[in-house]
Length: 429
Length: 106
Image 1: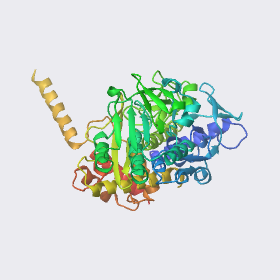
Image 2: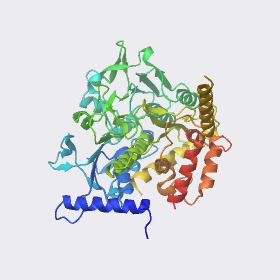
Image 3: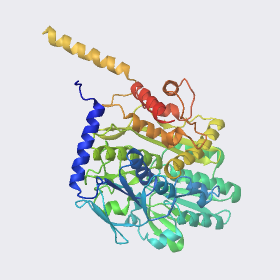
C-alpha cells in the first residue's frame, strides 16, 4: 500500500538524514555536534536572548558572558535617587538562567571578537567558539565630547546612567546637600539610553526635595530643544513642583561642553558657567566598547542591523540587540531590547535549523514616574521594512494629556507592575 | 483598449478589498504569531502567568483574547496602554496571536 509522504514523515526523514550526516561528520562522539550560541552582555537584551534561544531550541548550547554576578537595572533606579527604593531592590542575578534554562553563564569580560574565526577571547584567557553570536553590550560614553571629562569627573559629577555604585553615590550627594542647594542635570543629545530618563530623574529628585529640602532647585541643562512626553512632564512639574524645576534647551545655551569638577561647575556652549551643589552629568553616548572594538559600529557610533533579524549588516552571524543597536525608530530602552532579543533568538534558531526567517514584530513600552502616584507611559509598535524599523502609524503614543489623577495613579501602579513583570520574565522564571 | 483598463479596475478593486479586510497599515507580511505572543510575555508574564497586577492571559480562549484585543483597538474597552498597542495590529495578527496564546500558554 502506497501513500504520499506526509509533511511529518518528511521532516522525520530529513532530520534523520541530517543526523546521520552530522554523526559521520563528527567521528566517534556518538552525538551530533550541538550548535553554539554565545551572548555577550547580560542586561535586558542579552539575558532575554540567552533564555529564549534555549526555550526555542533546547538542543542549542548557549553561553552568556557577563562581567557582573549581580546586575542592577537602570529602570527604577531614579526611585533610588529619591529614596523610594534601595539599590538592592533592583539587583538581579543569573541563577535561574543557568539552573532552570541550562545557560552556561561565564562571569568574565570579552577581550576581543574574531568574526572570521567565529570565536571570542575572554579577559581571563579562555576562547569561546560560536556558530552565532549575540552582542548586547549596552552603552558607553563619548568622553571626549565634553572638555576635561575623565574618571575623576565621574566621581565628582556622577552620570548614574549605568545603575549601581554611581546611583548610590549620587543619592548620597543629594542626601548631603543643604536645603536651598542647586542640583544640575546635564541631559545628553539624542540618541541615548532611556529617552524620558533625565526628566523622570528631575521629577523624582524634585519629589525628594519637596519633602526633605523644599527650598532646593533643579536646573536641567539640555543638549536638545525638546524631550519625550514634554507636555506631560511639564504639566506634572507645574502641578506638583511649581517653581522647582527649570529646563534650559539647546537653543538657549543648554548644551554642556566643559566641566570644572574642582569648582563643581559646568560650562555651556557659549561659555556660561553653572555652579551647583550636586551635578549629574549624563554625557553623550555611543555603543558599548566591545561593539566598537569588534568593528560592529558605523560612523554614528552605533551598530547597524538588518531590521528583519537584528543581524549586523557589517559582520554576518553576529546579532546586535539593545541600546548598542541602530534600530531605526526604536528608543533605547529595556522593553525595546527585550523584543529585539526575541526577534534575534528566533532568527538564530531558524537560521541554524535551515528555516526561513519569521516576520518580526517589535514593541516598546516605557513608564516614567513624575511622583510615586503619578505615572506616564509611552508605547510604540514597530515593523521591519526595507527602509528600516519604523513606527506603525496610528498606533502607540503617550498617555493622554488630559488625564485625571486617577489615571496617573493607575499608570504609576502599572509602572511598578511593568518592572515586576519584565524582570520576572528575564531573571526569575 | 478596454481589456487592460478593466484589468486595472479589477486589480484596484482587489487591492481595496484587501485593504478593507486588514485595518492596520499595509505591511508586506503579518508578524509571526509566536513572536507576537513572546512580545506579550514581557508584561503578561512567561506563558501568560503574570507576577504583577497586569492581567494573566493563561487559560483564556482564543476567541476571548481576540475579542478583548478588538475591543481595545476600537476604543470600545477602556484601557491605559492596550488601546495604543492593539492599534498596531491587523485582524489576521490579532486572530493568530490569540490562537498562539490559547494553544501554547496553559
